[in-house]
Length: 171
Image (cartoon, rainbow, N blue to C red; front, side):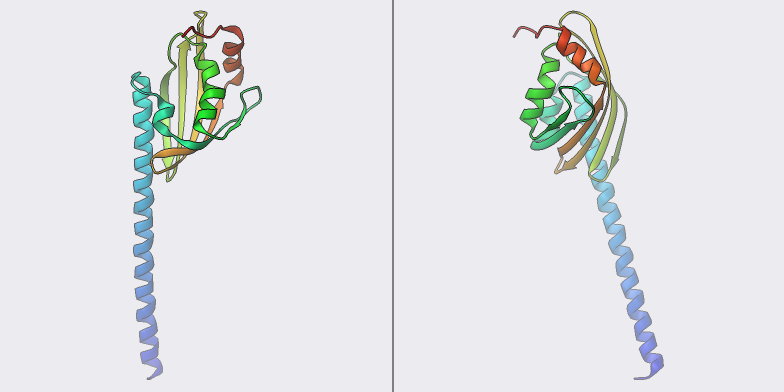
């Protein structure tokens, strides 16, 4: 075997390896793009359903064993280790003091791979007849079409004022 034939074989192998790498990269990009589109569509549909009053967004989106973190300070800030814990300890204290459901107005949804970010406003009427308005940013990490981790940013003072100044709705 001559030096020239060894060089040619090396170049051919390098070319084949490059083609394989390009194909694998393209496949990974297509897979991430598919995941991004799928996750964005799932979240967008859940918010559309919520805005139309036809679903429970938490039941539709959240995995049972998910973690939800509310950032900020105040009694409700912290991390909840399951969907039930989050709903019971963070969502219901507010929702029980509203006479109408929160209606979301989505401003934008961003998605990249398994991460989806939703920026929206929410409004409702409290049990005392006062308006409740808040702005939210929710960041989701998704697996198999469900949220497994969530981070929430909102005006916790507005949340707490509703909880502190309104009687729970009668069931």
